[in-house]
Length: 443
Image 1: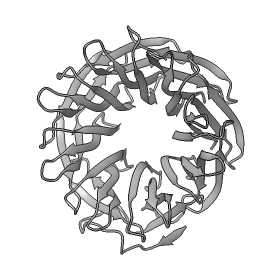
Image 2: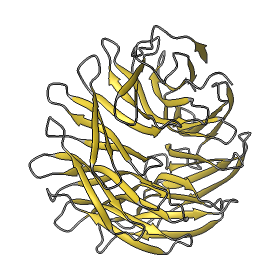
Image 3: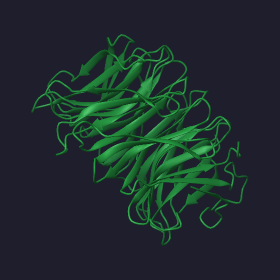
Image 4: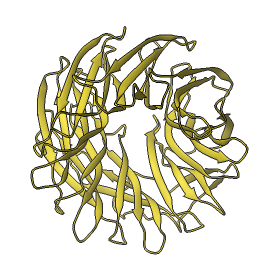
C-alpha cells in the first residue's frame, strides 16, 4: 500500500478543482491475477472491495478486502465454492450495522453449472453465512446485482437457467440470517433468453429489477420488473427501440418520488446503438424516453446512471466520436427528460475512453470514472468532475509506476467527500486490485 503525493501520475486541471491532489493508493495481490469488480462504503467510513482472485490451488475465488477510510488494509476474506471452480463476484453492499454482503456466481471446476453464491461477513471479516441458489434446470445461474432493503432484507438478482431453450430473471430475497424468504422468476410472455443486470430499492421498499429479454421479432428489449417486499410482481415494462433490434439495459436508479430510471444501449433507426434512458412512474407507466446518438453515429452504450435531490438524471458510458474513437459521454436530463447538457471526454491519446461509473457528490458535483488510453501509458484511470451545469471542473488520471493498464470498474463517494475508485492494474506479473482515494482529507 502506498500513500503519497503522486504528482507524477496525477494530472489536475488548473481551475478550481474539487478533487484534492492528495491520493492514497492500495493494491491487493494474491500471487495470481486479481480483478476488482465492485466497491461499497460502510457506515463507519470503511471501504470494501470485492472481485475475482485467481490462484492455482482453488482456481478463481471471491476476494473481499476491507480498508479504513485512508486505505489501510483491515482484512481479506476469500470464498472458494465447494467444487473449487471459478467463483466470480459481481456486487457488494453493506448494511447499517456494518455487515458486508457479496454476491456473484460460483461454478464447477469446468466452468459450468454455476450457482448464485451470496456471502455475509461481519464488520471484522468473519463469515456469517453463505447462501447458494441453484435454479430450475440445474444449469448456469449468475447473480449480477445486490441491494439491502430498509428492513435489512438482502435482495439478489441475475440470470438463471430454466431449460436448454431459455433462462429467466431470478430474484432471491434472504433474511439477515441468510434464510431464503422467496424467489421470483420472470421470463415474459414466451420462453426466451433473459438476464437481469441491475437492482434497486425504491423509497417505499419496492424492489426494481432490469435487464434484457428476447422479444418476438424485436431482438432483445429492456425488461423492468417491480416486486413488493413479499416477492409479488407489481408490474413489468418493456422497451423496444426504434430500430426494432437489440436493446440491453445496464443500469437502474430510483428517485425520492419512487420514479424509476433505466439506461443502457438500444439499436436506433440508422444510428446503430444509442444511449436510451427510460423513465417510469411508481406504477410502471412510461413517463419519457431520451435517446442519445453521438457524433460518430454508432456504438453508443450507457453504463451507469444516478439521480440527484432535484430529480435530475445523469447518464454516462462510451460514445463513438468518429476521429476520436470512443469517448466518455455524460448527459444530464431534467425530471421531464429534457436534455440539459452533454459533456464528452477524449483522453490525451485520442483513442478509446470508456466510462464505467458515475456518482453524485455531497455538493452536487457529478463524478465520472472509467479507463482511458494514455499517451504511452496504456489504459489509465480517468476521473472527471462536472459541476451541476456540466462545466468540467477537474480531470484526474492515474497511471501506476509500472506504466501498464489500469481498468477502473467502480466508484463510491464518502460522506467526507472522499472519492474511492477501484478496478485492476498491471502488476509485476499479473493484475492486482487497485483502489485509489482522492480528497476527503486524512481522517
